Image 1 (cartoon, chains in turn cyan, green):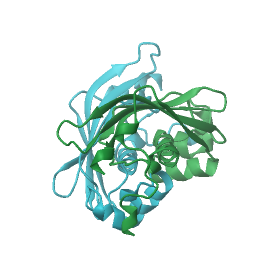
Image 2 (cartoon, each protein chain N blue to C red):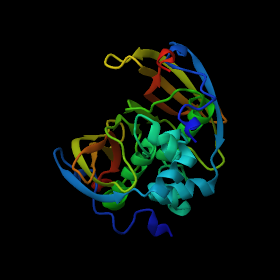
Image 3 (spheres, each protein chain N blue to C red):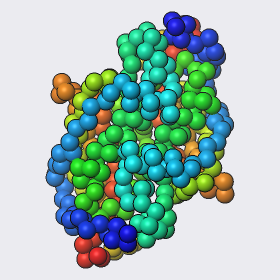
Length: 158
Length: 158
């Protein structure tokens, strides 16, 4: 199991990232069941868990929790890019925007844009990739954006 | 079911919030099973899903996904405050910080501080409560912070 520490598939280090790169991360379709399950666990507001109440709300129908949308973006990021990176986690999110409702049956496509690569000032084995994530729906509308740093190991520290 | 549109328990409107209020939101204990389940669904990085790999990582053991931590904060916010508010959703998050690892067995206590109350300029039936959320662990260490606006209906629009 120790082989998992540095996955054999690690291909990308801090050194491999550069401003203006764009990574396509794949897509995900939100089912009503998954929207209801996530919201019942983590965000049980009426417009996320109750179809009748949601229909009467200003959203006009059931919508996914923004935390569900963000978590799905994270899954697409891991599957589409991070799984092959020497990732070391993240200190947080600089900005997250829920730009339009995500409804049952919507298919979101995710991409990650690199804004900046910033080597750590205190630890020379790592640094941050400053990114902007975006998800668009099947109609091409941007429904989600995220600005976040991710910590990666440098290749020569490997 | 239409009674759900404006829950009978709605007690708090935009008018009831003011800067410097602090709401205690309760606490939540993270189990290893829940950490693994969330991470397998949404954030399958080695230090979130693989105990052996996590032990060898810079975190020294399994830690919860930051998206799990954020989602648990949201649940505590709904249960502890939002369920009795005339809530209309949120445009997003202005900042989220994962300040220290959350590990299996950790119990986090959440609170919400009101920074500002800002009536909508375009729609006079609503406005935003600008908040700062914080979670501390059983040792009193701040492990999570969030800056976010929440949209609420005004009482006189009811």
